[in-house]
Length: 420
Ligand SMILES: [Zn+2]
Image (tube, rainbow, N blue to C red; front, top):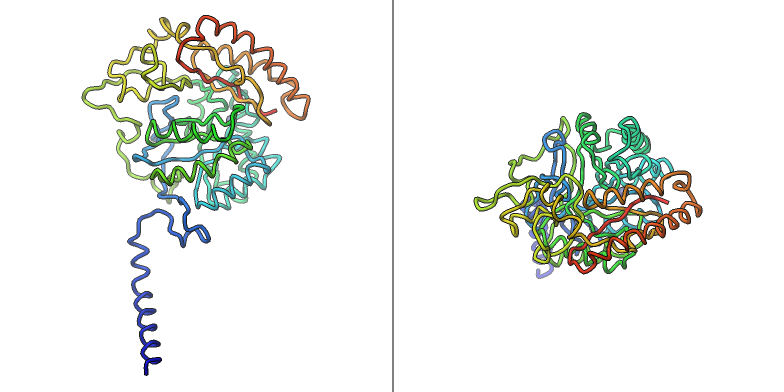
């Protein structure tokens, strides 16, 4: 009797669950459920998919542009550049898989050509795949358009060639070293390709510890509250830092957003124009010109001698009266920017990256980029040695510049990125 009752009750529960469970799942928040991340009940997951139309918002990322992705507070988009490089890219993929996180990868044509399987793995895992040029030149801001177009198209050609279904390639492009130029952007935009800068990097191309990469990622995210994080899936330190970053994102209540391009069958997520500004203007702040050259000055705004040179998108919070950029350029750049650290010009394993700040340093960095261009850049030890030589060559010049400005609090993060 008792036994029968238990059986009946068990069956009742089974029936009840069968009826209710689909409803419960539907009603649950969009965050990845444990069931969606088998074996990883504590996974951070991917909270939502954002569909964007590149034609409506052709340039994004407040490191350089006025607009960025329409993220809500505590939403983060992870991006990885310069792959695929199996040794590290595969580890990054595994870490993301363990957390059921979808990210965006900007692939280099040469890398895709050498490791097409790496591109297919990204697609199979459901990540978004954009491109990052053919050979990662750091001179797209000054090269003839014919050459720039060949770089863009080569990257697209080889990355899509690696795919079983080339239509999976997203019309997203990140300019190497963020060396933007109007002509390059206009070409990309004319082809319906969205130009991606970022909202903050974690300096994972520099010779810093993985712990520092983790700290920078979290600190810069916390300063903005949301945004696009720029990382590289070709660095050991990034692989080491990523699990810690993800754990901390979860602990701090951040949510991952997966970005995909709009298609005929997949309309863009409805948004309002103001959502595309990191900090929408208020009645008490006026909009000045946003920077369109990379501003890789990372410092607390309060430590700056004057507003305007630091991350200008923090202006609504800290800088009610933004000085016109020209005035700043003429008056203050030379006197307020410290020279970059020497280690910025050292070459991490596999790459050098130069991220640029002002016009002043852009010229210097372009010289470095030019110096590291050439026959040594492709392969093997010779390239690394030559690049190191170049880096060593560059150091003193910047040290000399530093003499007059070293005591300034402003920190300039400048580096040249180049695959060795
Ligand atoms: Zn890159």
